[in-house]
Image 1: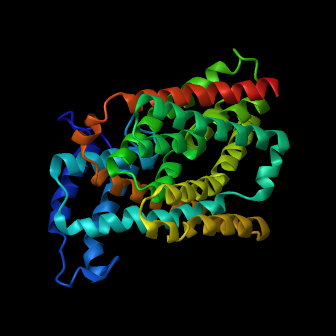
Image 2: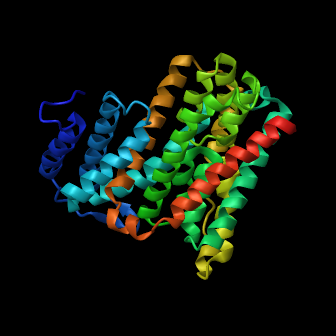
Length: 363
């Protein structure tokens, strides 16, 4: 994309164009509801097309100077929020937006398993896995506890805890499937995690010589503490190839721990619920599928081309899911949350960085 002579960014103009196209999408005449929880194909397509348009804007925005630092997932959230709060979301697109936010995201999380093998986890050694696991657990508990002391809503605190301790936006959307927080809370958590993860990506490489970290140690620190996978890769390879590879494997090890964390949260939610039917609700089987995919990827050698295609499809579907969340976020409700959740996210960011650094240096 390029900047126009009016001074308005091309991707902003693209959003305006999306508005005209989206409002022209036929709403369909078929009945929207076939059965409880089931939506007709004709009803979901307008929303899916709108989400796909927002996603394409997010990918195009990365070509604008200054935006390349951000992943398409983050840009999609922002683009979706701008669209919904400035231009308004067509009513006939809501079913497709909900489909993208729920089912598409579940499938994308399952596909994340193709980015990890048990051999990769073993590559950083038992000590590295221990550092990652200890950091994840301590950060999650710290964030939940501090959130309670600060008076932050429990579900929002859980989202911030998951995003900080595990894997950023992907962990937030996976956790929300079992916590069922408001869309505005998801958007708030993603925004906060993005802010501090970006700071870590830019600042941590500068701190490596200050703390006397070699490439292996720095890779472990970056992989155990920085929020998003893309941010970890960006920070790790700034300090060398070995640092980048170690950071990537450490981060993917954290991603693998998403499954037991979500399962644990699901159990906690059922025990806490006053609804008797909640105790009988099924476990999040997309997590079980994620584990099965990791096992399959560890046992079966797949061509690199197929791995690359799956990775791209996974990122696109995750981006579409976050675009859908942005389309349902109300900025006025985000403001009503105040600064306490931001203070919680900042405190969690400082804790995960300090705790993991301590383990890398002294354990």
